[in-house]
Structures are given as structure tokens and as C-alpha cells.
Image 1 (cartoon, helix red, strand yellow):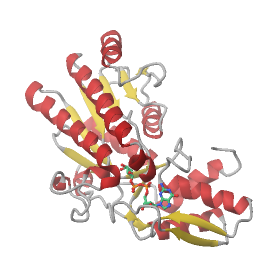
Image 2 (image 1 turned 180 degrees about the horizontal axis):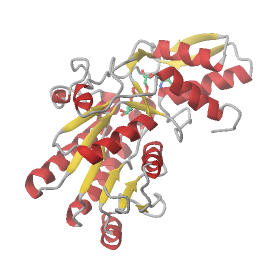
Image 3 (image 1 turned 90 degrees about the vertical axis):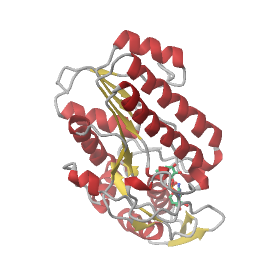
Image 4 (image 1 turned 45 degrees about the horizontal axis):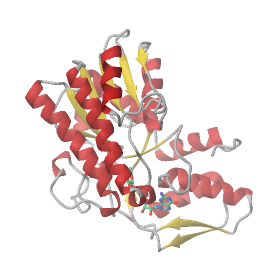
Length: 310
Ligand code: GFB
């Protein structure tokens, strides 16, 4: 990418899109095309086509998506499937029609089968049943990977698909119903400390294991892959290390300084038992995660703890 190339970041207000924008700005890029979802509804094919026709971006980071934690995925299945299929299909197709030089599509580690071998290799895609709580989201993201690959094969488009693990960082969602576990626990422990509660409730058994990547690291990896990686298929982006939800709760409890108890709510789902990314391909592409989990949580919490952030 040249510094004055026109770059469209779809989803620039979200956690991922805003991190990619910060990274590109730090690298000296200036020519961004940005539209909030109220300015451009990416589910509307006609509007997306008109937008691409008018703006003609050189590069596209496709970070726009309907996202959420286990409860949101499990509750709004229709929206997760429809919105994501529409957003990605409209943007990927318009990128082909308007000769975008390269597009980077963001997926998720939930595309892998529920009981796939760990760590999750890229070759495990479509080898088994998906986790039911996020099957609609996973199906949409798998369709996105396949659309990028099909357009590469049939039309020669340089569209790549990257699969981040569970993410956290600035501009995360702290709504307790729809958020992912890490921001939810920061908020729960923080509020419990402020209001002198005796206990904090975590959903499920606490035994599932997850891998967490700071979104600044993700943006760094996306930038490198946009610059250097031109392969079909998918590439994982993660740290290669995971932690149980219970251990995560204890870590956040410690960082926040809450002294009460942690209790389980077994009426809530556990989801996939483990989702650890195999990051060999990423390491071979020349990138490794830099921000450790404790350091990352401390930095997120440090920015927020004195503010009313939700
Ligand atoms: O982060 P999370 O919502 O999503 O939940 P997934 C991870 C684990 O943390 C589950 C437990 O076992 C939850 O039951 N958990 C404990 C909590 N306490 C809480 C809490 O207060 N809030 C939340 N949200 N979880 C999502 C997928 O799966 O991850 C998406 O549904 C996507 O499709 C995303 O892939 C990255 O890791 O289970």
C-alpha cells in the first residue's frame, strides 16, 4: 500500500476497525474512506454499490460485522446470520466489481468445529459440527472465507481471510447482556468493588478455555498481512496461549482489586470447551503477539476505571 492509497475501513467505529485505523495512521496513511453504519447500511446492496462506484477504494479492511458474546450469539441467531451474510457479501462483491486491489476479511475462531483438535489449525475448517451457540455467526464467516476464495479463483481477486481469536481492547462493548467475557468481567468486578458486593457471578462452569488477543496486536498483524500475505484460505491470528474462564476471573479480580467471592451461574452456557489457535502459519508469515494478557487487561482497565465507561 502506498501512503496516499484510498483505504476503506468498513466498521471503523468498532473495536477492530478503530484499531486498524489507529495503526494505519501511525504508519503514515492519510487517505481513508469512512462511513458509520448510520451513514451507510452495508446490508443494503444498492447503497454499497453506489458507495464503491463513487469512492473507488484501492484497499478494503472488512471489519464491519454484527458481533457479540455467547448470549447475544445464542439469542439473536437470525440477525447474526442475516446481517453478517449481507454485510460481507455486499462489500466483497462490490470490491470485485470495482477492482479493489486487495481486501482483508476478518473472521473468527468460532468458525472451527466445536471439538476440533487443539490447537486449531487452519486445516480443521469444515471437518466437524459447529458450536450451537454461535453456529449462525460461524456459518456467515465461513461463507465469507469461501466467497473470498471463490472470487480469487474465478476472478483473480486478491482477497485474504484472517481469523482472530477472542479480542479485547479500546472501544470494546461493556453491555453485560451482549458483551464478551473479558469486558463483562472487568465491569462486573469493578462495579462489585465500588458497591462493596460480596460476590461476582460468572456464567457457566468457568472451565472453558479461551485465548485473548489485544486488538492493537490484531491491527498490527492485519497491517502486516495486508502488506505481505496473498494466499487463499485462512490464517489464524492469536497468541498461542489460553486460560480458563475461572483463571481469567481471578486475574481480573486481582487487577481490579476486588476481595469477595467468585460464584458460577450454571444456568448459562459454557460454549466451546476450548478455542486455542495454532499460530505457526502466522509466525511463518513473520508476526508474533506482543501484548501479554495481564499487561493488556491492566492497560484497558487503567484507561477506564475512573470514567463512566458504559
Ligand atoms: O466471550 P464469550 O461470550 O464468548 O464467553 P465465546 C466465553 C466464556 O466465558 C463462556 C463465559 O464459557 C461464557 O459462559 N462467561 C463467564 C461469560 N462469565 C461471562 C460473562 O459475564 N459474560 C460472557 N459473555 N461470558 C463468542 C462467540 O464465543 O466468541 C462468537 O459466540 C465469537 O461467535 C466470539 O466467536 C469471539 O468465546 O464463547
